[in-house]
Length: 155
Image 1 (cartoon, rainbow, N blue to C red):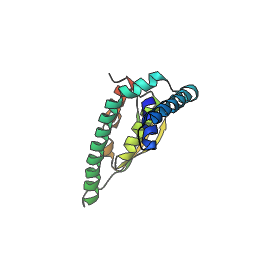
Image 2: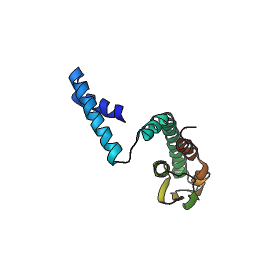
Image 3: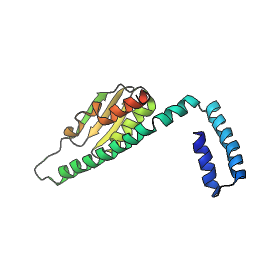
């Protein structure tokens, strides 16, 4: 996070000089100290963030793939004259522990066409699906598998 603050400082200045770098270092240290002291952040969380960057990029790739697949499924559903969709509310539980992973899962489901996360209460998700066939395997999807690996620290 410190490097992000420093890079942002240099980017906002629009040029690079030694004075800007030294002042930016001081500002980045002050902001980093502030978030560690008052916003429940730590160096451990910083290392976990850097460690999970690769997994997060994989997660984004999976999200793009699932969005494309769901787009085709919804398009097929809409354009098919003989197929009648069967909307459904699906409830499932997850073993994800961290709030951020649950939020990522809920938002990923909502971003995927044909599904909307209605509520998340504890470990239980309620998802509305345009067709009940879209809900198959949601509790063990690729999203959940990659988020479990992120919670485990990238193992």
